[in-house]
Image 1 (spheres, one colour):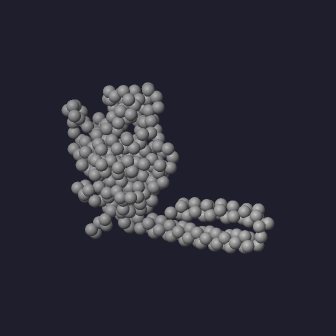
Image 2: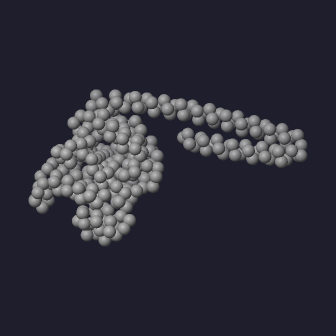
Image 3: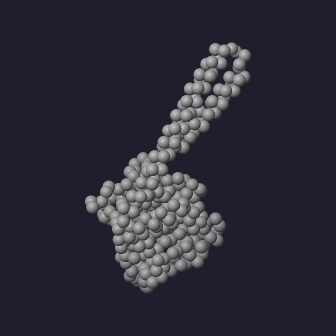
Length: 316
C-alpha cells in the first residue's frame, strides 16, 4: 500500500512540474489563464501534502504493528513445539530473515531442528557432467536434466518421509539400515556440492521418527534453479510420511514457491504455506500450524487472496 502511494505522489509531482512549465511558457495569454493555473497548482500541492501525511501515518502504523508482533511472538509461540523434531530444507540464496527467523521461532517454541539441508545452486544442472553426477547419485535413468532433477527431489523427499513414518529399519531391498542409507545419500550429494548439511548432533538420527518438515526460501532475486518444480515434488514425497509439511517464503520473494503450492490442486490439500516467512507474523503462523494435530487439514497463511494471517488460536 505504501509503495502505491509513493507512486501516486511521484505522478502528481510530474504533473505539477508540467503545469508550472506550461504556466511559464504561456504567460502571454493573460491573467485569467495564469490565475487558473495558479489555482490548479495550489490544489495539486495540497493533494501532495495530504498524500505525504497519509504516507507518514501509514509508516508509523506499520512500524507500531511490527513492534507489537515482535513483542508478541515469544508469548504466542513459547513451548508450543516442545520436543518436536523438525527437519529443515533451505533453498540456497534465500532471504536471511526467513531462514534465521524460522529457526529462531522453531527453537524458541521448543522444537529440535535436528537437520538442516541446504539445496545449493548446483541443482541448476548447467552442464551435462553435473546432470550425470546427480543421476548417478540418485540412481536416475532419465535423460532430460529436468527429469533428473525431479528424481533427486523424489529421492530426498521419499527417503525422509519413510524415516519419519516408520523410523529406522531395513531399506526397501532389506539390506542395511534406512537411516544409514539416507545419510549416505546426503553425504554423496554434499560431496558433489549439491547440498550442505548441518546436524545438531553427530550421533542422533538424521530424520527421527515422526519428524515434521519445513521448506524455507524466497528472495527478491532470480530463482537459483527450478525451485518451484523441485519443491512441489519434494513436498509431495514428504507428506507421505503422514506428518506436517510447511513451505514458508518471504513476502517480497519473486520465486513464487507458496503460490505454486497453493495453485496445485493436489499438493495444496496436504501441504501448508506461509507467505510472510520473514516477519514475526509469519514466524507465529509457522509455529501454530505445526502445533496443530497432524490430522487437521493444511492451511495457507499470509496476506494474499485465499489466505489468512494466522491459524485459529489454540484452545489453551
